[in-house]
Amino acid sequence: MTGFASSGVASQGDSGLGWQWEIRSVNGRGLDVRCRLPAGIERLEPAVRAAIAKRVTRGNVSATLTLPQRDGASRLRLNREALDNVMAIVKELEGKLDTAAPRIDGLLGLRGVLESGDDATPPDDKAVLAALDQALVSLARVRTEEGRQLETVVVAHLDEIESLNGRAGTCAGAQPAAIKARLEAQIAELLGASPAMPADRLAQEAAMLAARADIREEMDRLKAHVAAARALLREGGAIGRKLDFLSQEFNREANTLCSKSNDIALTNIGLALKAAIDRLREQAANIE
Image (cartoon, rainbow, N blue to C red; front, side, top):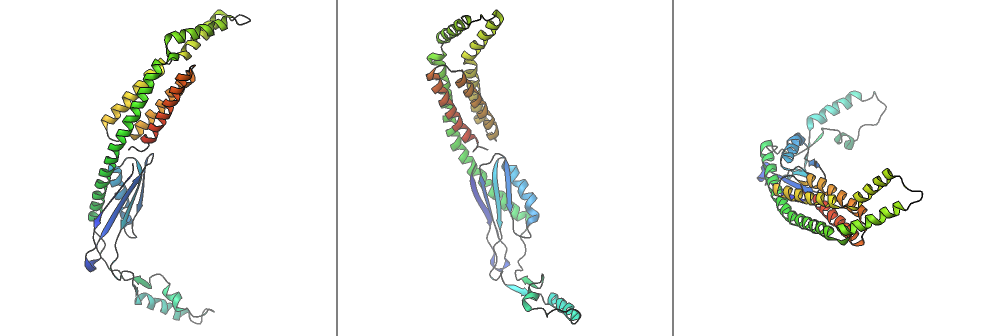
């Protein structure tokens, strides 16, 4: 499910305190969390992942924490003690190595010689995580609203599947009289085979023909799957994976129904069923 939420605390004067969370989620088969935290705040990543996992069970979620800089936070400051130590080493090695004197840009490029001029006190971990929780509450509210809209779409797809399944049962090719006539013609063809088919083999072939002609079992399972999907919607919660599984079962029954069909009208209904089931499966992928 998709969603966006943000929460944070504005920077207060010259203190440099302030932060902003941005949480984004998009559809995903499982839960994939990506954290983007400023340098020095990486310690919070395990707590951030745990907080997200408590409220989200499915989707690709990115959590970004921004720490606003103060005016002048980008200024650099010379660490004279570090520079003095470097110069002392240079003087000690002077004359011992056949190299040119160090350049100023090389000295300033050494780690620790130049430092950031930002002396802002780092934010409190508990306060930052509390702001994260606020953002996650907002994200859950957005995803819940999307879920309500998706429920209407899913119910419409289930209604369509249920209607098509009912039409399959009333199709002329699925009626007992039509099935009987088709079986009689096929058995007569078997009886007229040359050489004559043994009685036990004939009985096996007749049983297989009868099983392939009857779609009542597939229709009953489709009806049961529709009822199970409606029950899941009433249950609520994280039902996306279960709907995914049910969509596969729907598709299996529709495939079998099409393979058994010897009637163009029934085949068309089976193809319409497969299309409706495919639309249901696409929506199931959007549901947590």
